[in-house]
Image (cartoon, rainbow, N blue to C red):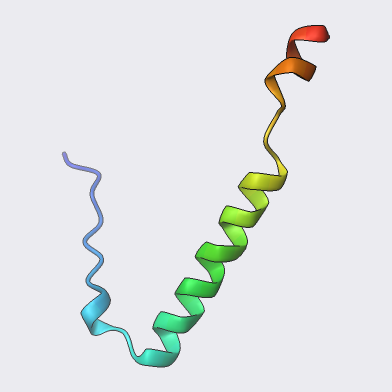
Length: 44
């Protein structure tokens, strides 16, 4: 069984695309803020 999801962005409206873009941007910001500095991690 394949666990794939087909996601065709051509089915989204412009408003929905903008919302998806904003959510992706917020998620990337969250990941950037949550990064563990390797030099700090090795000192612990």
